[in-house]
Length: 365
Image (cartoon, rainbow, N blue to C red; front, side, top):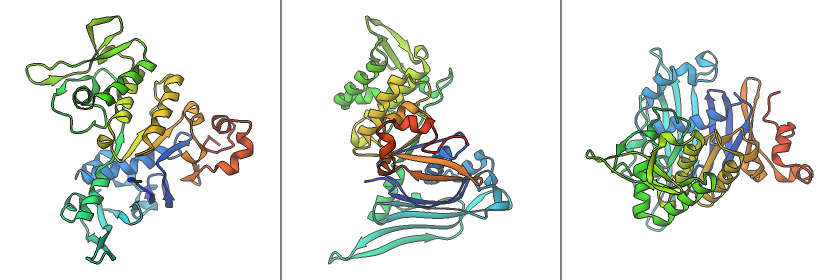
């Protein structure tokens, strides 16, 4: 597995302590509102900001260090995290607050394996002292460090909730903005155009899947203006000569288009670890069932971490894919379901039924 195999979190938002928690290819978090699902995903969002060199901006936008520390600096002196990728590659850090409301790196370390000429493995690593920004973007010289950075770079948090009038997915954007699908779908039209031209089979899968949820949908239309800008356009079945913009799509349909593009793009373009917070928003139950199938397909080669409130989605999963998040003693707890422990229940009930009956936990007390 190319993604995160194990992690430790301490002192981050509602997560007081989570030690050596193992992750699989498909990890779906369920729990009550405020239990800590979004905070779990938020740690990976913070990791992305560290890699992009925007950590201090992220801290300010979040409201300062006291909003990120577990019950502020009065209760927590530092945020600590360890990410393991495979058997050895890992990245760890410790963040402490300052009097001028910053979070700085008190400790930062990456670990990897080097090999002598005779093939014997030896440990390698890099340590930094106190600093404002992460050293992740500097680890590109050594092959193993470069491998570690590529894994961190391939950990992406997607959020397609914004489908309002000013949503970026509905706006014009550069025709050549096709390196990767943006986390908010801001380059969706250009990306789909690239897929049609260079990856026709994947593009056809995306269109056919969208039609299963939106039978009125025919195909996308790709036109650029004089400034080499493009926006999302599509046609309706039976009327191929009249293009519509994304503003004519329902919120749920537009989100499903984004999700289908993300999960059906070619494997070599897909991030190693994909995180999505409540992807079922605005989707019909049939679309949610289809989305579950897309998750399972993607998890055959990639890692997915998803939070959900959807009973329909839960019903389509295996118990081992599900992580239950609860809030106990003002802190988030996490445990993965075990099919053997639930076997007697599952003979008569679905996972969704057991969740609604509070057999699994993850419900308001």
